[in-house]
Image (cartoon, rainbow, N blue to C red; front, side):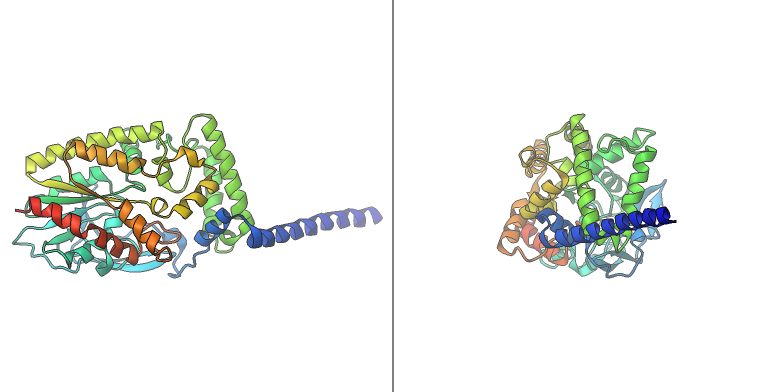
Length: 400
């Protein structure tokens, strides 16, 4: 009996000692933790203002769309649907063109329109219809703009839309493509691998598909979606250190480091980024051929990632991921994109310097959301301000 009591005492002492250590460590990290951890806690500590299940965030399930042979054509005209995330809950209204409604109404049966094509940044995930930069610019310039942005789309899908809808759209003489530096390069790569392979892409994320990795990802998803665990400093600290070890393991095998922010895959001169460029070249050649056949001019707007605009966020994330500052070049993807567009004589507007300047002048004005990487309403306004003069100058040269 005496032995059992002693054994129980030892177990309880160890248990309560561990609990005390965890609590003490949590408090210390909260008070004097590294800056990168504090930034991470700001991101994961965002309150869920929608009250919706986080598992539904980012899903397009139930969105009213028109397909042709499993390919997206447009949203159902005059439909409505909600887009929710931790930081926003907005309703999207669709116009007669099957795109997001803008402040300007364009007649479907007469006159020329100028479509904006792109992904969720153009569509305006996170803001109201009237707050998207397409809607804002439509009130300032004397052209009939429509917003055909489609969340999750990339350049190949946008070219498909032109092929399928050019006549329906009254044969526009100008199409405005919006290229988000943050993930449009990687979207080209990932979707190309999916199309041309029976397996999921593994170039950027080695070990994907193995049971051990799936188990780790399941645990990570559980922590991220749990309102209590995701706000624990100690858990986030341990996750970050494990990620650094994992990235060192990848680096030792010549593989690009894994990050949640895709911009870090294209601000490093890696073989993966060069492969993305090959695919981009193919799509730009396709665009050039299509533009000549259908007699239209393409214009590109390059939208920077928040880590390119907010240098302080960039430096903290580099520490979080364990990436050497000397190995990255935040302007690399922009230079590459502008060089390739120039080769095809495609005019472009690079918003990086303009948004950098706006952030420098007013650093407390959030152009991007804290956790979500999309533009806020103020971010859309900043984009509209930045493109006003150069876009008007470019369009006036090609307007019929």
